[in-house]
Length: 268
Ligand SMILES: O=C(O)CCC(=O)C(=O)O
Image 1: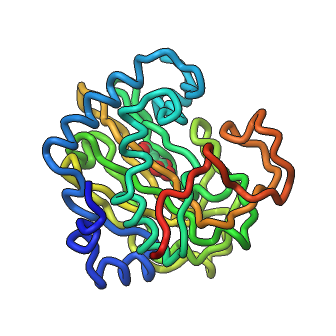
Image 2: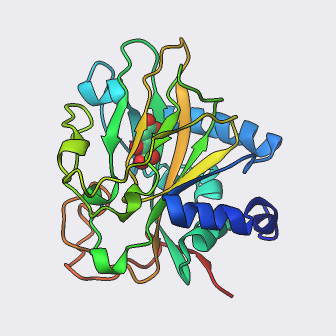
Image 3: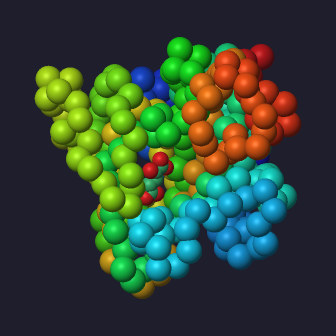
């Protein structure tokens, strides 16, 4: 992929839309051949032995019914690292977030399995992340659809402007509470949730505070997505427990840096 592609994918309107609403859709972020490669790479990586990556629940588990998730695939699988460290994708995150530099926090494959599938409840991402707020206000995720998605198999919904709400308490995705009851009703924007149907190879970006949800999967095939979480260069560790930072001996207020949190894009 080439950095110049970013110009074609990201108009001024898209950047403004993201800034005003806290999410944006970008069609065809992957070419047909990239999509085919990433689909088969994610299938392989989900089955490959885990050394640094972690599958967070097993078949039958309550979390698995919401998401069959494997975290940190890039560290075990070169084919995934190619996309997770890719400068075109990271450059989109850099431009949308208005950061000077963007580091990788982590990737995760999110499969919504057929069968006893549950929706992903409304939540914000930031409350899970071990980042000091003042250093990481621009952190965001790219959600790359590896299958066509709509309401039948787990497409996402976003609440426009909810990225302006403070970070609330994390929601237990397997036993959810209602996030809308956490915030004073005055703080919740009076916008209507937006359902984002997409073709495989397209993506959304969402800000760490944006309320989002995904439908359950009522089809007979998994719904596959690869998600990459980016944080602004200069983000520091809050000390909160997190699967990615476990065992790294990071001290509170340390900067995220080095080969585990690589700088994947910066303003030239
Ligand atoms: O894929 C899903 O069902 C939910 C994704 C999500 O919550 C996220 O990417 O932050």
